[in-house]
Length: 417
Image (cartoon, rainbow, N blue to C red; front, side):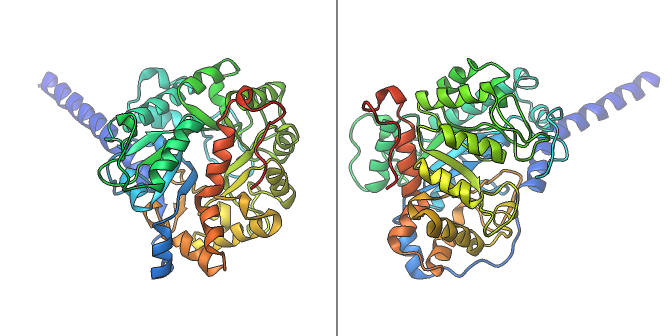
């Protein structure tokens, strides 16, 4: 009798554990990446027609963090390949999130806690990712690579300026007969979607600058130095000290520029931003966020910082969630983009959704016509909309992906368009 009871209890424990590992990751995401369900902007026929002709680039999403098949349409979260295709996205930047503090907030976070570890274990990722931030990034890189391999040429990895050029040719000529290598053949379903791998904080270097080579070898071509906490490279806007670059941080910026890896200032402290902009030799991006002129949140850029990014030839990716634009309405995103345009020029405006980044938004990536319509409503011209929705980001990536040694003598950055 006792033995039977023990076996029953063990069976219940095992069943509960199996249920946890099957259902918990999806439940957490459903509670984390939300769509608020508020009314959308009515989209005109003119906006629909224009949107279909755009080359759209989103500079930041955290979709790789979650246990979902990128190639299948999901009923949760904000992004997957079918929804990217619905939204006419030409290039998506996929970020690797490796660490996030407990009770995460915009004001002050310690660097000695991490809630991502629990998610990693619950998703039953390889055991080396349970304790190593570097291995988490390498796992995300493999996840993106496997998705591209299984996509029947619908998802293309972008790791060089040449890759980007091939992608731009394909999206500009959907009906052309494919030429060259089969891997670059246009998928039967229409235009391909490009995928570029990035990092949300280089704490994944684990204190060793040599690990930057490993990340580059795994396909990483953009990286922010910090996330929600201070690390060995720099102070975070949301950290405790909020300091500037360390010597390791300066070395990381120099090496990234030399390799052809775009430097991202998102989440950096104001001092960190100022020091990166002062030393930058290549275009710098703020991949996702907003501007303090329209949404006074500490993570958003001041006018001086916007001018500094523009001086490098870079772009500011505007997001669609409360912390970036003080709303989830596309009209608020358009107002932030308008401020950047009016301050430094349309050539420095870009998109940075932060989809699947523990954010609540009004619309997912399949509904990006909301942004096109909002820009039209703000009086943006067709040329300005094309620039803001993707052409500016493509220009900056085209320049930033070229290793410094391959540039003509004396040229360190592409001038603003």
